[in-house]
Length: 355
Image 1 (tube, rainbow, N blue to C red):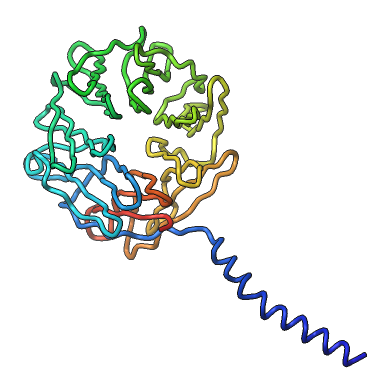
Image 2: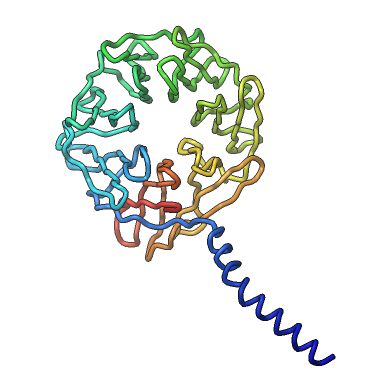
C-alpha cells in the first residue's frame, strides 16, 4: 500500500512539473497590458496640448502651443513607432499661433492652424506641406473636422454662428437648423455623414449632416446636460459623452446608441470631461480622469456597465500628471499631455498602453 501511495505521489509531481510551465506561460500571456512612459523632447514651458491622432502604431501626431514673449507659438510632435520628435517644417512654425485638431485624410495629415488671428488648414503629404486658407476670418474657431472629399470649420463672427464647408475645391457656408445658437464640436465619417453637437434655445442637441442639410438627430440627451464629444462608427453605433447638472453638481454621463435605441449610464468618473474619450482597440471607451496620485496619471475604461481604472508609470518628483489627449494606435493606446515636476513648470509627457 505504501509503495502504491509513493507511486501516485511521484506521478502527480511529474505531471505538475510538465503542466506548470504551460500554465505560467498562459497566465503571463493573459496578463493585462500596462502603461509605459514614452520620452518627449522638451518644449519651452509652459505648453498647452490640443490634440492627438494616430494612423497606426508607427505614425501619430500631437499638436498644441507653447508660451513665448510675443504670444503662443505652435508646436507639432511626430511619433514614428519608436520615438517622439518635434517637427518645425510646417508653414508658420516660427510665427505666433496655435495648432488645433489633427486628422488623417487619405494619405495626408491635416491640422487646423490659428495664424495671426486667421485660420487655415495645413496639409502634409509625401510631397511636403500645403495650406488651405479659410474664406473668411472668424472671431472664434470652435472646431474642425475633415474626411476625403470634405472638411468643416465651425465658429462665430460678428453675424453669429458660421458653418464653413470645403468640398476639396471651394468653400461654402452651410445654414444650421433653426434655433441653434452655437456649435460646440463637429466630427465626420464621410462627406455625406457628419455629426455636430450644439447649444439651442431648448438645450443641448446633436445634429447630423446627410449630404444635403443639417438636421436634429433626435438624440434623447439627459435634461440639463451638455455634450463633450460624439464618436460615430461605420457600424452605425454612436457613443456620446457629456455632463449633466443635477442636484447642484455636475456628473459625467455616457450614451451609446444605434438608430433610435439609446442607453444612458453614469459611470463613476469623478466628473471627468469626456472630451478626450476614444474607442480603444479592445472595443471599450477610454478617457483620462483626474488622478488620486500626484505622481501617476489615471485612465478610465468603460465597457458597458463595467468601469475600471488603470494608472500610468510612476514619475519621480511629479506633482501633477495630466494626459490631455488619447488616440488608438493599432492595437495600442497613446496618450499625450503634460507633467509638472516639483520645482519646474509643466512640460510634455506621453504614455502607451500595450505595444
